[in-house]
Image (cartoon, rainbow, N blue to C red; front, top):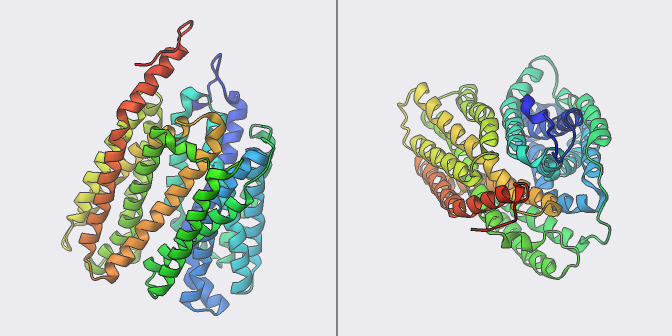
Length: 474
């Protein structure tokens, strides 16, 4: 870990001491958003009982946060270019913190939902530009290691969320889950404002019409997928999906004409970037689908309790926490696309082994298969994220970061929706798990297609870095 904060002559990014504080600000901001996403789910029954509302209404405490966060990721990534990433990140943490305090003080479902929507806005601001800030804080030679650290933080947050929620609820009421964010958020906001790199905004206009189309597109598609995943009447997801697709069509038309597009479509002309995005989206579909399908398999067919099911999932994020930083370091030295492809191969094997589980499988059988999935995903994600960030010019880092966060959120949500759709159609859980194997296989094909491109880019960068060497291409 100390290697991340060493400074060498000629390094870009922040000096070592400032780098430590900047990373701490990013870790605190990311942890609050990620832990919240899984911690609050544990408290939904308690919230419903205290506020006197039904289970069908209280789920919007989680859903509204997710919808708002997903809908505004691209908007805030583009807005950060106008107002600077430091200002937007600090403002996002501050908004999330104030909204957490409002949630803790809420005495009705309506007021809680308002503050949960504001929390979603704050989370979108931080999650959309967090990866691009790593590119500014760390020198290029350490970017893979830095993104490995980011993967560790996210995986640790997802793993710790349910445990933290259960621990707090065992000694206090649900408002304390939100109140926990307040002191951490204040520290993170002050740190972000003082130590994150200062940069001037680009000036010029902002694509407000594109922003409205983006929010409508992502919000509509997310609500459609959520409706499918939760068994809503068929007309609801169809209506939301149609609205999302129509808004998506208008969004693409707007991006081709806007002087300052919200999402420059030229990004996707870079094959390394577009293939990395495709690999990421398909892998997250497989992950989201597997998590939900396994819950049904463990509890309904293998008769494990909810608590036992939660423990059976832990090898996945815990393995990512161990492997992610190592994969990031390797990505700084080796072809990152090759590493990502190797990780996807292991993930594919792990998912196939889970799909072959039967009702008589032992706990050990479940654990090693889940750990294999975590090993593969941990080896895949940091190098793939490095490819997404380095395959675009530094000036487009915020846009790439927004795409990275959006494709992760949409991919996981689509995976959840597919489980609901297949189970509603009478498909078995094991057959549904094979759909995750299929999407991961497609992700592997996309990753393999960019191996020679990444290798050529790496050789050119090494040649350009040699003293007195002229640029050359193979």
